[in-house]
Structure formats: C-alpha cells, structure tokens
Amino acid sequence: MIAIQDVSKVYGQTTVLAEISLTVPAGTTLSLIGPSGCGKSTLLRVVMGLITADAGQVAIDSEVMTPHNRLALRQRMGYVIQSGGLFPHLTAHDNLTLVTRYLGWPAEQECRRIGELCSLTGIDQDLLARRPGKLSGGQAQRISLMRALMLDPPVLLMDEPLGAIDPLVRYELQNDLRSIFRKLGKTVLLVTHDLGEAAFLGDRIALMQEGRVIQDGPVRELLHNPATAFVEQFVTAQRSPLQDI
Image (spheres, rainbow, N blue to C red):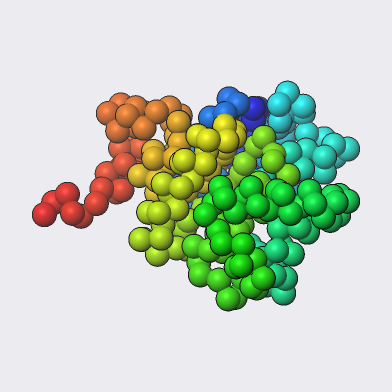
C-alpha cells in the first residue's frame, strides 16, 4: 500500500504540491493525470524518495519514509520513466543486473529472475546483449519494466512509461501492462496525460490541477459527475476527433 498524507512541496514562490493526500490500496492501480506542470511527476518522485517533501509524509506498507530508511524503501519500489531511462553505455543485461550485483545476488539467481521476466514481458533473451541504442522503443520500454521488476518489489511507480512510443506499439504495451498488473498484483502509481490510458490501466483516477487533487475516483465519476468546471473541460479536451466523424 502507498499512503500519501498532506504532502506539500514549494520551489521559491511556486507551490508544486499543496497538501496532497492519496491512498493506493495493495494490489490496485491509481492513475495520476492532469495537464503539464500540475505536479504529478513531482509527487511520484516524492513517493520514490528522490525529492523530499516540505511537509507531510509518505508510507509504504505502513512504514513511513525517513532519511534513514529511504534507500531500503526504494528497493521495495520499481521505477519506470518515459523513454525507459536505460543507461546507454550498458547492455540491456547489464542494465537489468546493475542493482542485483550491488546487492550481491549470485549469478544463478540473476539468470533465473531474468528468464522469468523475459517470459513475462515477451522479450527474446538474445536482445539482452544489445545496448539501448540498438533496441526499438517498445523493446527498450519492456526492458525498463523488467529492470523495475528485477527485485520483485511490491510497489511499482511509472512516470509516462508509454509517452514516447508510437501508437501501434503503445496499444500493444497497454494491453501487456494491464495483464502484468493483474497477474502480479502489484501496487501501482501511474502518471499519464492520457485519460483513456489512465482508465484502461487504473482502478482509480486522480486528476490534478496546480498541485492539488481536484477529483479522485473511478473514471465514470469523472465522465458523468465532474467535480469542477476544470474536470469537465479536461475530460472534454480528451475527446477523440473520430467521435465527430
């Protein structure tokens, strides 16, 4: 479970997060959506412990994050960013084993886990000898997901993981991600700007505006009972032009 309580963050005169409180129950997916600059990626980084909040707290499975346990809690969270975030000078295999080698995993354990993840994500193990520059966007993103899952963390944080991928590959990965979420039962906090993607992958949606959560609930609530004029405008702006043809 992820519990975010009264989290605030200010940079200079700009309030990026304003007393955010959200809970993601174990085994569920919460999609964070909103316009650029609304604070959703900053909130994800606060949960990951990459940014320290000015106020409030984050707890992972009831353990409150502090400067003393931040590194240990990070090892219980997988993190996937847009474009994969793989180290370009390392092969895909070495990207996967970077943390496990630091933790002293034996080679047999690494090999077994990589095999499990290749099967889960549909990646051919022959591709692991390539560097990221020799992989397609979809392949790189699958390997980034494998890296995030390497330690089998209970929590998965995803920041626009499909934002830089062409529509056909994105469609395929959306289906694969939903299948993986359901199969593994991870607790997932997903950032996306796409309402359709948020609804497809998430059990709940939290819409943010200017550092605040404006509405939190099932997608049907946003569609049929918008809490504010902004929510209605945001939903309307997501309408496909094909609907009008």
